[in-house]
Image 1 (cartoon, helix red, strand yellow):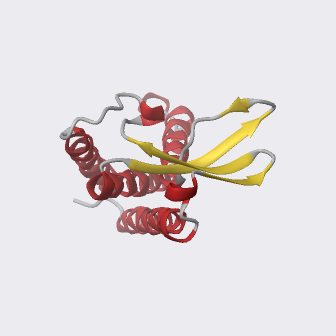
Image 2 (tube, helix red, strand yellow; image 1 turned 45 degrees about the vertical axis):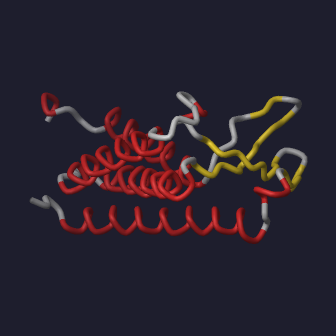
Length: 163
């Protein structure tokens, strides 16, 4: 049962927006910028577009070329997305609706990559003074921001005992 339809619709709409933007940027990187053929495009002194096929999970952990890996990781992500959708149906706050919408859209965007390519398309490469961050994509950014909102909500929402 959906506790607050407005929050649910908002979260699902946000997830769809993130999904469309994520897939559009990945299409642009592969088809227009042809980053998979060029490898890297320097944009600014601290930002490059760098093509990375992430066959693992966060930061490339558990990466390998095993044939079943994309199916396993994609299936796990879909199960998690279904659980998050159920949580969204019971969202108590707008922060939760925002957070879950961001996480859902990002997770589904990366699942689509695994289904299409067997790996996730990563291309945002930030660096400064010789220090480089892991290469990521819009879906990863949405997931991180969404988890941040969920943590924030857990930290600042009054507990049931305090009410």
